[in-house]
Length: 382
Ligand SMILES: Cc1cc2nc3c(=O)[nH]c(=O)nc-3n(C[C@H](O)[C@H](O)[C@H](O)COP(=O)(O)OP(=O)(O)OC[C@H]3O[C@@H](n4cnc5c(N)ncnc54)[C@H](O)[C@@H]3O)c2cc1C
Image (tube, rainbow, N blue to C red; front, side, top):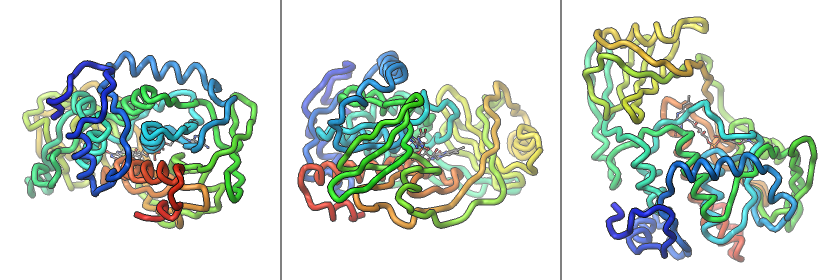
């Protein structure tokens, strides 16, 4: 895709015209906004070094209070927002309460629109190299195929979903942030917010001490149990889904079908197979009961379609609960919400992280313009 730019790692270049053009194609999101420099893909070992640096030095830049924006939460939403602000020259202080990135993995599906966003940042190749292509969704029920959705017809230049672990998505974004002079301040928890007409005071707890910092804007990307949302008194409307889902990672021994499609079996129990790199699969299922054996549940459904297949190298069998909720407002004065802090849906839809990425990308350029003097009413636009 980026034939016009070298594949050498870490080269900083002026934004190639092709990137500007494709960025401008994203619903005109970036039209008129300076993109600055684009950093080309980094190597995994440098990403790791950047992550280690952030883990070992949580307070390193909290003593200076020069940042304009506080981003709370370094999941995919907060990381992308921090990247977007930093590359536009808006300094931001990104905090996360966890001492290290989460290893329990969640999102596997990066949608075409998210790939377009990564392309505009010069990151598409790094993502494509790290993930696997999911070209179709094959739907089955009652032991028979019902139909196939061909993702080549989705209208994007990326006619596929990318199968990639959320942890890898986060590490690529963290590496990009580091290249642009940003960092994640870990073990730093937002505990209080005081809104003022011209600023927001944020109380942050780090290693047992508390400190207060002043920012022009605060964005809560702190997930489903958002402290930011709570501090602003913004409610969450919707409902919890009563029955749980479950997930595990596995290799399918004796698998004769494709490795390039999501396979959905709408039986009881329902099972969804999503491909990951190295011919691994993430298996989602609706367990038959709260105590049932998750592998036995999934095998019972799969047996009707792929009798010679068995599960090997199983990792992280886990039950989880789903919710369908949306915040009653996405902004309270100088405080905004994005990602799961603002809306949550069932992972079966594969939208949660993608919506958060789209929020962050949409908000990034608007907030950058507002920090530069534009009318804050821009932040209320969709
Ligand atoms: C099993 C499963 C599978 C999924 N599969 C998909 C999929 O295929 N595709 C998809 O699009 N989505 C999927 N999702 C949803 C996806 O994981 C979430 O939507 C996504 O992680 C949300 O990102 P976020 O950055 O908004 O929030 P989070 O990832 O929750 O990040 C929030 C961050 O804020 C930090 N934090 C919280 N409180 C504070 C505080 N007070 N101060 C500082 N930091 C704080 C947390 O430590 C965390 O790092 C799945 C979810 C699950 C459970």
